[in-house]
Amino acid sequence: MSTPLERWVDESARLTKPSKIVWCDGSKAENDRLADEMLRDGTYIELNQKTRPGCYLHRSNPNDVARTEGITYICTRQKDDAGPTNNWMSPLEAKEKVRPLFDGAMKGRTMYVVPYILGPVNSPFSKVGVEITDSPYVVASMRIMSRMGQAALDRLGGSDDFVPGLHSLGDLNPDRRFVLHFPEEKLIWSVGSGYGGNALLGKKCFALRIASYMAREQGWMAEHMLILGLEDPSGKVTYMAAAFPSACGKTNLAMMVSALENSGYRVWTVGDDIAWMHIASDGSLRAINPEAGFFGVAPGTNAKTNPNVRTALQHDAIFTNVAMTATSREPWWEGINGLPQEELINWKGEAWKPGMGPAAHPNSRYTVSANQSPSISAHWEDPEGIPISAIIFGGRRARVAPLVYQSRDWQHGVFVGATMASETTAAATGAVGVTRRDPMAMIPFCGYNMGDYFRHWLEMGSRLENAPKIFHVNWFRRDRSGKLLWPGYGENVRVLKWMLDRIEERADATETPIGDVPAPGSLDLDGLAIPRESLDELLRVDPGDWTEEVAATGKFFEKFGNRLPDEIRTEHKALADRLQRSSVVTK
Ligand code: OXD
Ligand code: MN
Image 1 (spheres, protein in one colour):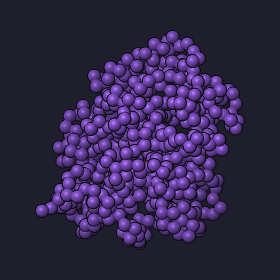
Image 2 (cartoon, protein in one colour):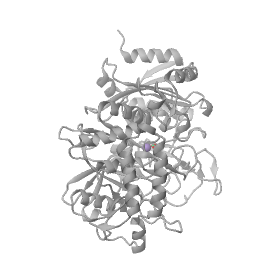
Image 3 (cartoon, rainbow, N blue to C red):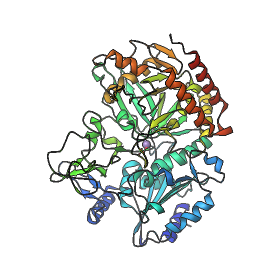
């Protein structure tokens, strides 16, 4: 008797017609074998094995370097269930359109069966997925990003409780590229792309799009959030989860070396991109990181912005679309540490000269195991997860949003998350630097109607006995000349410390129409030379800007029609009223 997994593998092989099928066990020997094959056929380029053992460079097709939201679909039976922020096709139409692209797609290629666990191996909250792919780069990446191989097969046994994901590189033609999600049957199809967010199906496709749908059905949350622990001088660790849109510094924040380390404040990493959160029996919210590695943006990463990842990247890492120094074969990217001492080969494999544009692609990436970071928390694999005391929303905004503010309560916090906006980055194809609405940083990742998603957040709050406090941050506010006002990176710990002090009821706040900002003197600025005017500007809530913001969010909410919860409308109206009254009172 064959198992459900074997039957699906057979069916997929009949469709894609590979010359060989390999079941992956996740072992080092298997990974070494794949690396040798990829070095031979040029999928991998060897980096300096003396200074960086086990590190390789992969150059993707230049037309395939970022997530492609335009061809990413949520295929529910009813269009309204996908909602106004997702592309939609009916499951029938989607399969009819895309099945021919899989037909014979693996001819002459190897089909890899990649079983994986999202979450710690022994956690009751973890889930099994199986990806079928014809890309050995995907296999090697999945081995870093998830608990891949035998452990997943052992957990699955003969059960049908897994999310199948069928992936083929196809012919890498953007016109024949599709990333399809069938949340009602918990199935993923991806064809025509080898880029991480489109092709590592455990990441955005399962851990966010399919998982967010499951989470609503089952009463938990799958969020685009980092998880960190802030240790105080007594050694107590308080955990926080933070949602920022792609390429807005989640990895750097989660792995931060604190500027207040000498005063006893330290940051520990639990996860850098995705959080699965459940209500525990004591009514608290507990989170696990479904991933096992980091798929981080390389440009801008250096000894100041993320010293921990520099250490992590010394061995066993995959670099994608970075540049390489020609003689010493070291990975290189803009913002790494000034200009290199030697010739560079750019991300396309060409000899690079200044004036040719960036040597590394702006969305070039590193893939590395989380446990290679010196900042990894001792509790990052706790099966029950860690308790979350704060939820942080944030975006990249040159104006409008202050450095930090605290929501009035959970319902207002959900509204703050629902009104998030950020300037777009290179993590997805399309224009960069355009402000777009991105509620909870989930616009590209919510597997269902976001009106229902806001309702789910509200319902979760009503079930939480000890709900986390909700904050909003903006590290990216600029002065009139366009200069960033806040130094960011390790200094961001000062804002986290203020949050901790608010949770512990030690810090004062000034009430504003949008929420509570730090009262004068409550933000620890010891040892940081920041002009008084910069601080005032960073915390300023401009009634004119916010009145425009209220109009923009009102327009955005109209899209959801009657799927928008009344509570969100109530909060929207209350903010408009407070702005009109606009008096500032110190608590
Ligand atoms: C990512 C993204 O890669 O959000 O994490 O695009
Ligand atoms: Mn992300």
